[in-house]
Image (tube, rainbow, N blue to C red):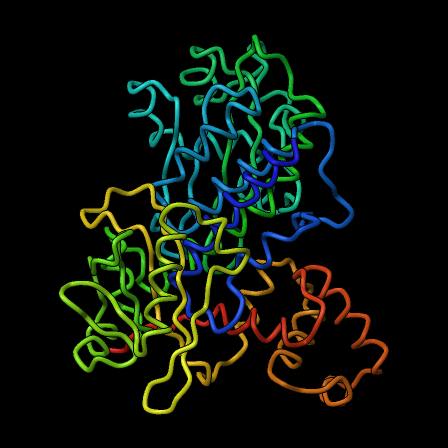
Length: 431
């Protein structure tokens, strides 16, 4: 049992590293924060823990699929189907739109018959009417799943409803209820994930609600990552196009170290031969020890990502007397890639400055506004006393908020917060 659980946890860690590849990690990878020995996935709602409603191995698998979709949106149907089956629902529909233009970042559905799928777009206004209109929908709590029959019982009652969507679309499919989860609701985006349930499956019970509550923070974080990549223009058709926009040097290789792709920054280094070089089509590093360590790490990442431990593997190298780190991370993507790359190797300058990405960290870890302000200053290098003075509060207040930040992010020291901030800086190339 424990072996299976740790295997599922490594799966989650591997998937979160995929997201990390698109970000400049200057210390620990995000896997460090999603994969801890005493795994207890952080929640937006306080006090929630894994319960008997779902097997821990199954929960770990679902969360892994969600984070897989965080970087590669082609993985969303797989995650949606797995959750749909777990909730004993008939179909799933996901929509994530930018505001105020309403452009779709994501618009997906699963297990809906084709002739019904084609008609869905014509019922947008009727669906909103089901839930009580836009104003009512905007007041629904984001940290709770919502059941249509409990919000508007008349909407699903065949004897009382006059809703066109219910009469023409839902009832003919024997659908009688919906469980909806909010993915985003702010000035920049709005989104939701909904699951339709057939009448013969019975009403939604405590089990389905409990599972949905456990998944909500992870679904919302995945949507946040999708939005981040979209906003940074990184959501390209292939992984190669994505990483070519990054100023950090990234090289994709196979298990034999053959170079399959190098972005612009990496090509410059390969041409210069420092700190990485191209030897007969294979990737190498400056110095024999670093090159040998790189070969071992790539072989491990290709065959058993768990062998790299919780943080992947960072290999120190020097270029022109400046310290850098080669990060070796396993790749996995749901999109077909002509390169068949299995490992990403990228060069991180340990001295790269950054501005703490407070809003993103707050979204990913569920920080309150007060906790976010403390995070920003502590991650930026200020002391406890300096933070208290800048925020005009007592040191004890700062300490309380700081302890909450530690709890939510899963780190125990200020250096850990600085590494989180470093990890989330997007090094997007300009021009």
